[in-house]
Length: 210
Picture 1 (cartoon, rainbow, N blue to C red):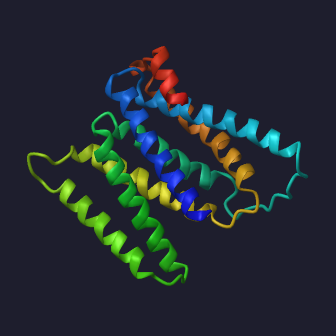
Picture 2: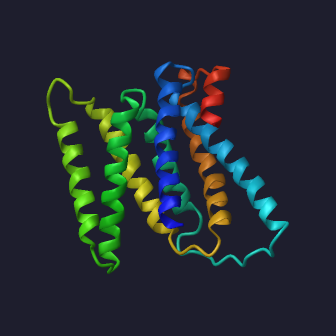
């Protein structure tokens, strides 16, 4: 079951990159609004899923975390916002490669720091990802824009940290729902700061919601 879920997650990641690039590359919506709509639609969807799950099983007791809901919410936002702004400058394939490499590197380093054994297959995967990333961002005629690459790297590291923090959650659906809700004020703040550049089309909103 784990390989299947991993494959589904990878397909979702790739699809997210394509949808984001379609929306921002064609200027159907601005990056700040895309981030806000994305998080809002995610929060609403998770609330519906949580309500449906609560009708079938007893609610789980929530264990308070050391930093409360703000740290995971901040990590989620620091993934979502740079991800959106990066795709103003990057192609879908380039952005996905940078994102995946940084997520993988962050999670493997985090696993090693927590005492987990480093598997040789993981090492090969990390080496291939980092080699491809190094080649991609090396100076040259085909090198992607540095700012876009840096923003996507920040998004990847943040998502890796967010994923590491979520491991072992007693209530993954409930925790993720709260993370999306608490990330909304941050996204709203960025949208208000960038309000002069805001532009939304029905297609852009649909792509952000998908």
